[in-house]
Length: 400
Image (cartoon, rainbow, N blue to C red; front, side):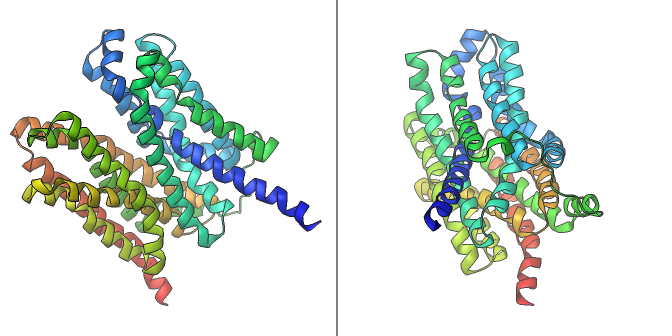
């Protein structure tokens, strides 16, 4: 009798974990898949490089603009149905993007951005609900590591897929992550995954949610995430160019830039252990100092590029994981976490979307990388200081 009781619970835990991993893979893969086939897309659709760039930038802008809509959907439908909608919508967006010409590509891209925004907001809520408090930081690290793994797989495999088929197939196929996640989620939850189930609302639930969304700690965390996202997206966009301007061949520059992404997996898994042994405030300082390796390292000793990419890569993986851990660590029910998450992600991804643009404009206007790296330094310092400020109350509470 005991084993039969344990088996369904064990399947549920496996199903939820697999759903989170597959969802993490789809949260970025449809976006980064465009870069390896950008030239093919540009030639086939007869558009400018800037127009093709919109296929990457629109979803990141949607992460910022649509975060409040995602919060409203989660409150009305519940986390289970919201995740179902996010996965189904992202799959539909991938298909629409590959169906026809420029209009279909833009509409599909907008759909991808909207529904992935819902996924960004709802997954931390599901992690908080489904796992014991002691395991939430670790599972958050696993979740963000899976985002990096999905990004790497798509970056490596999209161009070969396009060569064997065409760019439309190569972009559409990554919706398979979302389809697999959707099948696993519905198989694990059954009708719960399809039925509205908003959390029971206490008399002051909306007030508590608004309080969480506008709390000083939330806004400190939002500024920290903006610094993290600005630094990550700017570095991801311009690191290969920086290396090539320093004399590195294009192929080697691309490989070195992938080290920055690969190291993020270790950083995402390591930050929960560091936070457990020290505190979230100390962890913010450590990852912020490590992030300084990119701007300061390339300003003063660009020849040590491998060291800076490894240390900075560890920091970027740790940074995004730390932010998602903080969303839950600051407390509250699902509504409060959703409200906090909406504020933090709206501000953070707005910063992330501006990063590549700001650094590109500065580099073009100055003709060097010094000014862009100084701006990157300011973003990292914002992450360090605001991150420490947002987590400091948790340390004081623990001390008491």
